[in-house]
Length: 261
Image (cartoon, rainbow, N blue to C red; front, side, top):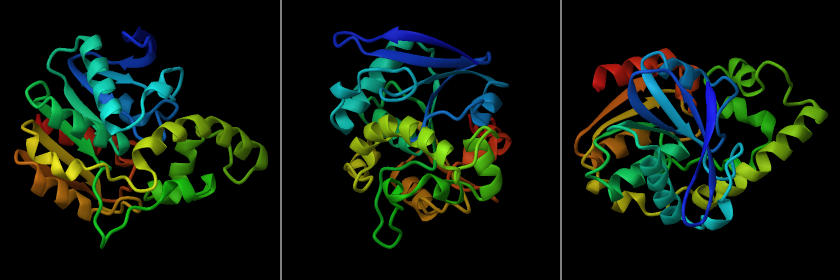
């Protein structure tokens, strides 16, 4: 994987873009946790596609978060990034918060985005299945919330080099997390509902929805809600996978994308 930077006009936001692989262009939008070190999903996708994965302002070395106030700002920013990258009819893949952004992009620019993959997207609210508030959780609680296999999930989240119950590691993790969760909070806090349900009918892209059967953060029932609302959509559920379905089962997600598109 390699990184480069693009600058968006007129505000001058500097956006870090991670790239890997060769093949058909695939735009990947990350979730609230950003990219994992040596992200297994990006690595898997890069075996088949040219993966282009911009980091949202507030993440990595991307700047400009002060200019993004709400869902509309973030959606238009992401469309500006897509235009600046000059990709050729990419498959747009978004995970969790990134799936929420990708769905908004496809609803607003429905003639420009023709292939869409939503990995356990946020953005809807079902009273019978409330989404867990990640902002109230301590770091050591996250692996069990995000992964079916919590032990393997912790190793992925710490890149095998830390313990989320160790005070020193915890301090470093909290410092790193503060900026990106500040950005994510504009979309997800106090609940991840910014009216997307009223716009999903506008999506005309061929859409693949992927959910981990054991998702403890956003219940698998949300997959049915997205499928019902998006006309040209297919729902795939992956066994023994939690919310971080792409990182936990990268080969299965890659296969679902290859088979569908």
